[in-house]
Length: 638
Image (cartoon, rainbow, N blue to C red; front, side):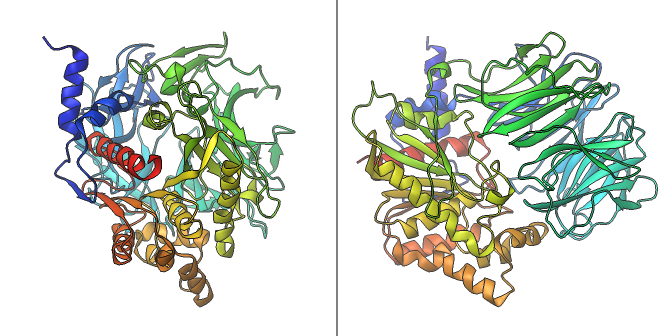
């Protein structure tokens, strides 16, 4: 009789074969031995908390079952998540009806196209009912306090602008547009306590946003944040329990996102904390109005805090099982238990709760059960070099175990997307295979333009300063050269989305220094990217990258685009792309591949017909990782 582990490997070997929906060029056959060696690193299934049951101590989470993320119920801490959905496409989040909990509403797209649809899930019989039109992009669903109405944003009207809608999910015909809006950067933040108004955020760029209140009955909209010559960004925003104010974060007259309260009558702003030298990145007022939970981003590590709203005192910091990245703060209706997601270098993302009166935390899910033992994984270090112009940047560095791997180690730089993203010391998942089995050191740069280091730093790569962020990579590479534990002669680069652009730009600028690159859904030409990205995104991206309709900016964007500098690349490249990507279209990968072939540069290509901005389905993601390992063994390790 075969053991369970043998059965798992047998099933994995079948799944790891090239799926019919993948287009593969230049990738050699995956050896069976590699499939077996990597299999246990692909077994981790991160879990995301999405909501509490309103009446019972139960959680909704999303986690991978049958190859894609499904909505699941966790009945108690440590219970096995029970799948509630069973579709072939991943679920992007969901929440119980907030007063009875007899049904849930969730989001799902098709083939990674990010045109999400809302569905009602009746828990009694598991029936799913489509609530939206099946065609437009629908996002930001948030329940009213009374539990009848659901607010959400949709591009239904013209495919470009994002309007505010409300619907009673029990009656899909009740769906109505509350207000027409201009632009694609609108988000539902909260409902007023009496459900008479909805709080909206208007996102213009990473450096600028505004808050508005909308009357649900009349659709009248009032701006709640002042107009200013200075660009001001606002973070997560929630109504106070009494409905007289809004808790939010703002970088007005500050370098970092500060916690403030806006009085809705006078619009007077009061700073709730003093001396916070990091971004407040998430907040959650308790249902009883007594406490405010919030997160600070301190050198990329999340720190959870509690504030007593009655006297403004900071409560003792909760004792958590690990330092890492926290997200998804949500109070139970009872008001004393706070749920959140926690990921660390030695623990996959799992759902936790904190009982604030006892300061006791509980782990609800176990995404890391089984082999290998994540508790033995490498802890990173933080490096803070000075760049070419004296600007401080940083990098999170993971070094392989020197007892297992002697001598200087090859290096893979992995660059985040955004561009206003941030590399953080969360769980590496399958990337731990690079460290533990291949002996590759991993370096995650946070170059200028990354979030988490203040608004000036965030804007340092905007417009004509785009290449300054690329030049920051030279500083990181000089650090690699000067580190005796690292092999400066074997360095590769990898990144996704904007990180894909940075990968291609690094291959152009530092071709002689780099061994190879892996470009995942990356921008190859800013002009064609801006012309072909989805309509609802185009103007938002023009604010960040520059408007290609302006002749001077167009000339600059053409000058710095990797496609137009492809002759400078001679090192091997692996290009990965989803056919349905609404952000960075397939054409960006195809034109780069053609140019590499014309210049006889070794190129591997992987395209999934049923994916979008990254691979979400297990079979596709597993094959992508196996191919990446093979690519690095061939072009970085040899």
